[in-house]
Length: 169
Length: 148
Image 1 (spheres, one colour):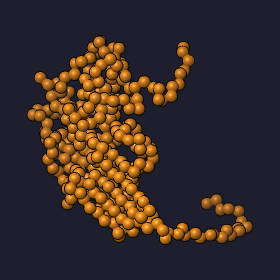
Image 2 (cartoon, rainbow over the protein chains, first blue to last red):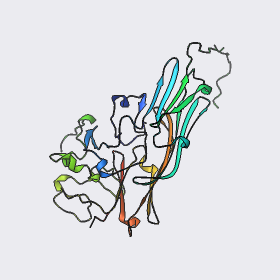
Image 3 (cartoon, rainbow over the protein chains, first blue to last red):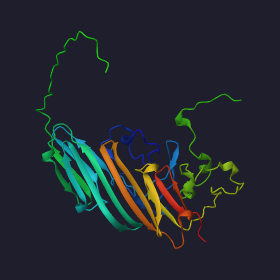
Image 4 (cartoon, chains in turn green, cyan):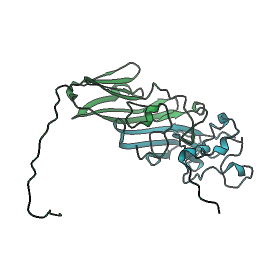
């Protein structure tokens, strides 16, 4: 996020300012607006921004919670229908992708595509991941986590003495 | 010559604060040029002190004279950078495309892509349109001509 040049529009939680928030907002994208969807400008970090009426705290979020014995991801995918979504794991990566072809909404035609990749933490078996979709469009991805038996693999290395000077190339 | 004063960023005045002072902020919600980032076609808002003098070729709105353009489209592009947005006009349709490749965020990696189409009113050409990208993430594409 270091490359962001435009101040973020939604100071919706203090957590957002932290480096590692468990919940991200504003993940719904390509929403068309009407002029009456824009609310009165408010001052944020020296800039006036206009909150939007269609933005709600409980929509368009991504939430990761990781405990000692389970791992859960909640992702709001309400812009997509179940058959437009796919979830897969590649090694320890969890890929959620959605794609819908052109469809009509109240503002015109729109097509969207996204791929979101989560990194599974230590102790989560990618083969035990389960996915469910709630009726209001929140994807719930859960997996059991086992942290008890994990021992760090330590390998002490021997340093060999070399009489010649270090090779520069 | 006055000495150089360096202010901490937190004490900097708000952007275009002079436009907001003493006016009902509700009225300024649709004044998109107050929020727009400078671009090739948009040089910024002139200071409100000179708002009374009308310069030819200036597009910044006069006090309280906001009029509705003949065609206007608002799109939320908070997640995209300016260079990732493409606007095209094709056979009476306005196409707005946004695409960004895998990028890191707080939860991993994310790639997004969208295309939106809006029908243009009869007779409106690409030359009659202008686009503003506001720093609060709203892309405005509107006709230069105002509603008759």
